[in-house]
Amino acid sequence: MKPIRELLKEIAHSSEPDRAVTEHAYQGFSDSEKKDFQQKGLTVYAGKVRELIRTENELLIYHTDRLSAFDRFIGLVPYKGSILAEISQYWLEAAAEVVPTHFLSRPHERVLRCISCTPYKVEVVVRGYMAGSMMRAYQKGVREFCGVKLPEGLEPYRSLPAPIITPTTKAAAFEHDEDATPEQLVQQGVCTKEEWQQISRMALDLFHFGQKKYAEKGWILVDTKYEFGRDAQGQIRLIDEIHTPDSSRLWVKDNYETNLARGDAPEMLDKETVRRYLLEQGFSGQGAVPTVPVSRLVALAETYLKVAETLTGRPLMSVGPLARTPLVQ
Image 1 (cartoon, one colour):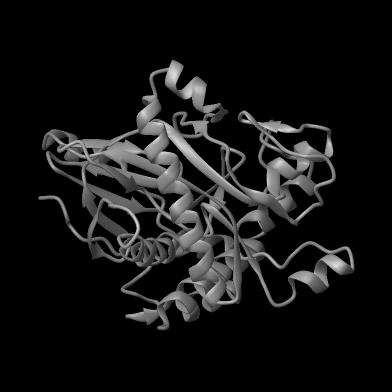
Image 2: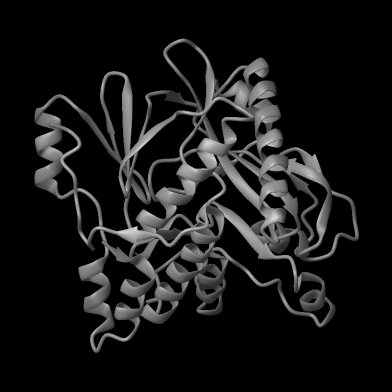
């Protein structure tokens, strides 16, 4: 086993960085693997950044190194999947104090073994600060978000009067999610009114829990998305990833006020740095995806790694760049 930090340095200093990324990154199941799984009667699904295998009672989530932004495939971030699996395991185990989760074990560095649940087709986005797409829309004059009306005078990167939920209906991989109000979710049959009340309460409890835990590390949990599902017994559980820098915005607390006082954005520990680069290239989801330099992709992996190792207090290791375990026989 080798520290992922060392492996990322090798890629950064490679004479052929593009080739090194491809060699060290895991892109997901091959066509032959998918066919083999399907022949065994298993359900295989490819999401934006994860591959899933569903058995009768369990779900195996394989974390690839694919990076998405603006609902488009952007590129490969080496070892991202291993890092995010580590962070997800940490938070799913911790979140069990707050809500039921689907997590069972982690049989491989990239794989989470979970209880099979029927997912609610909604991403529950909780926002605590004026940031990201909401900030950009607010600056253009928008004041209502998914049925929540925000007051005038809110400043960029500052906290909202209280956390709000802006749900989006979950689309197929690399298709655009659509904003929705809770009333629309009920009308569309995504969930019942009672289920939404429970889901939204669970999401806010998790957000406050995450903010408190991250604050202890010197970071600000700005916003995040949660997904929920119902198990075979009818219990609503937290599913998918939680509080990772791939699904959340994280800012450094120590220099937050200093940065804002001089007109700078907060120091970010998430993929917003790549989003901002894409926006600078004139890309916000339409047209050809600009090529993101390998240096930026490796820097993002190093940022994610910093989050993982700070949370767990230990260096993250890898058994190899394309290591696989035959988890399904």
